[in-house]
Image (cartoon, rainbow, N blue to C red):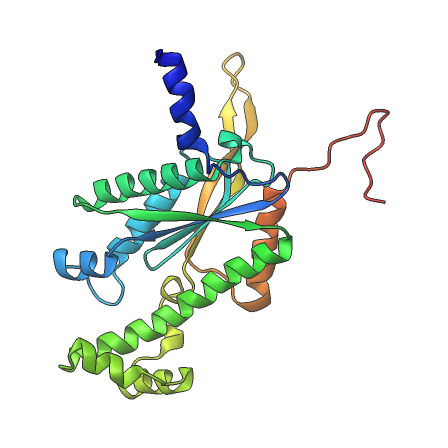
Length: 269
């Protein structure tokens, strides 16, 4: 069989299950670290339940993913996970899911491993969200999950510090309400509300327009230009304020309507 014929035959098997995200659908990627609990507790001497060094490596990995060829307008990280909101009109790789998932997982794994100086791996999946409300609900979900993880993590490691085994600490926390867990911490001098915001809410990354003052090389006069800079938000807002914050990111992800020939804007009516 000639090479061209062989390639045509085999390409069918390779691409038979390729899926493309429909135009107009929001895409949000979520990446999770593989085996990170063991990685940062047993193989590396990090503090539990949170270590600012791990936080900073996750932030740097998120920055890398927002600048590796995909049009990402909002990045969010908490614990060992990262979420990315893409521009709604992105057509990178023809919106082919396997490309997004494989490249993002590879980029995150390589970046974090270099920062950690050890082997590390991420998986990735894409959520296809049809409406703005779905995008808001997605990020509120991960935002609230950060709160749940922080409360559970502080309680678990408090019990471990008192000599309980992994199994005993886990059993003691089973079925406890949020109020019960807050009370457990309070009894040992820990006010959960006073803990750093990044532990309870995660960290957000988005672009801001920043004015830069330079000098005209011809006459030395001041020249003001606007540049895009990636901003890291370690104190994300709560409740409706966070909903408003996410909605602003969605507006950045949604391109303005294209003008209709004749100068009139297209209407939904």
